Image 1: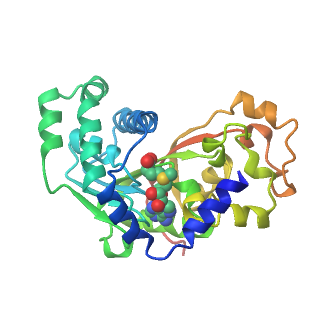
Image 2: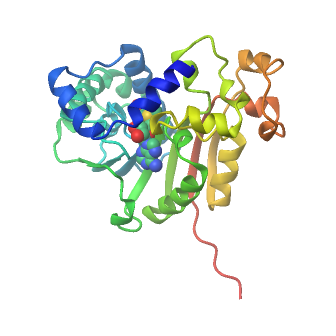
Length: 294
Ligand SMILES: C[S@@+](CC[C@H](N)C(=O)[O-])C[C@H]1O[C@@H](n2cnc3c(N)ncnc32)[C@H](O)[C@@H]1O
């Protein structure tokens, strides 16, 4: 893991990274990983299934943290969204990766049809529309009007946002959402270094002191706030959201790992089940602001 940290931290110090990325992409087209593409598509379909299940409005949509391949926004487009705001703090997405996302979404249309019952021809013509998406990087959400969005969603993003910034963002989402508008977030609570080194426990990062973790996550793309499942529930409630759906099951292998892992004291007050909940799905509704008491 520390070799990866060293490499990534050096990369984070390279100036003009965005320009270099653009040049490299021109010389060598972006190569995605089919298993990651399949997982993103399946998470997108899962989000749209929840949209249908809870009968949520998804006309004007905002994605938090688009990343490299905007497959999920394309699925929302096929579903019939009228406007989709894609946001990121790093310009990872470009015309090449957007074209790849469109072809991935096209392939997933029969699955979307199975979930929503929408006619395949309608899904296809929805997907072909132009001028629906806008990309804001940096997000500069303050430039968007109050109550202009029906649905805000993210996939594997919230764990990358420092807690104080997340608290502020939740208030910004409340401002942007129409009354009754909702958020759907899929959060990956596991140590992402394990994604690249399967010898690690999925909770290895909870064994690192705050200082060691600050070093390990110095590269912004490696930063994780280490919040646990219950923390997100508290954050949404405290921000005044009404929780419609909270999903998260402890991972059996990780529960087993916890018997021997030397978790730092800062995490000692969590239950093992809470610590070992590696994926959280939260649907939170923008509850009306309570009338001020006299
Ligand atoms: C692990 S990637 C996930 C990308 C994409 N959602 C997906 O599922 O493939 C996390 C993304 O969140 C972005 N991000 C981190 N903090 C953010 C913030 N405060 N606002 C918007 N995007 C953010 C990162 O730049 C990165 O693109």
